Length: 271
Image (cartoon, rainbow, N blue to C red; front, side):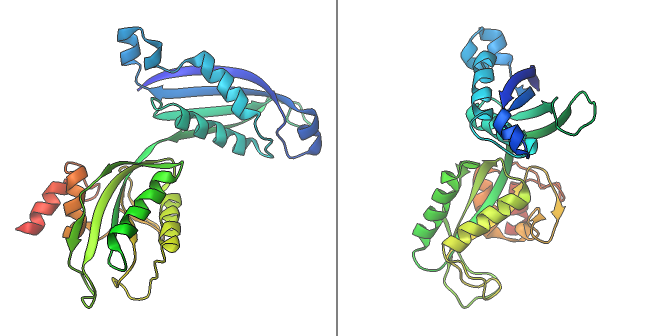
């Protein structure tokens, strides 16, 4: 991956835990490492195909001084987030903020915080069988799209499917989406749970009726056994109502444990 570097951009701002830091302000040095493809800019000599680093420096300074934070950890996180949201070309960014005048009463060169952030790709299964099923699915999609941190990049067709497990309930309406997100897996699943709650999802009967169900199926190539989120989704390879819509948008994505593509898993269920 190609990179653009900016080293020790000097900004005077009012961040810090102590009131004197917020009142008097102090010197900060910001270094950026942007990961993106520079091939098109290099072959066309077109500034629109890259990140204008002069503009970037001015915008970062403006963003950095917009609010006063207690922690440089928070300020660093906000700068990284700002760059990823502002520049579509940037896939990943490292931000390092140095604080040369850190008030610790000892001689030092600086205190610094560095974060490494990027866009992640996740696949989410959506289904529901209570009330206006079509409306509930569309409302869930809207809420995801309206967030600043998670954007829908692909959407499958809608499928009407029979219930699994608990059979005494209506048919489901299912689809799958691909998203790019700044959230980590735990943050993503909690965000989706908040949407379920807002759409009146109640977990009364296992595999029972629900207004909407939002399941993280895959997240990058990550595996996880955390109680809150198991990745990949542990039963996705057994569920045609998952694999069929997912094969619409990600047929050749590989399951990181089974080492099979989505279309291969779907075909194995048909046989």
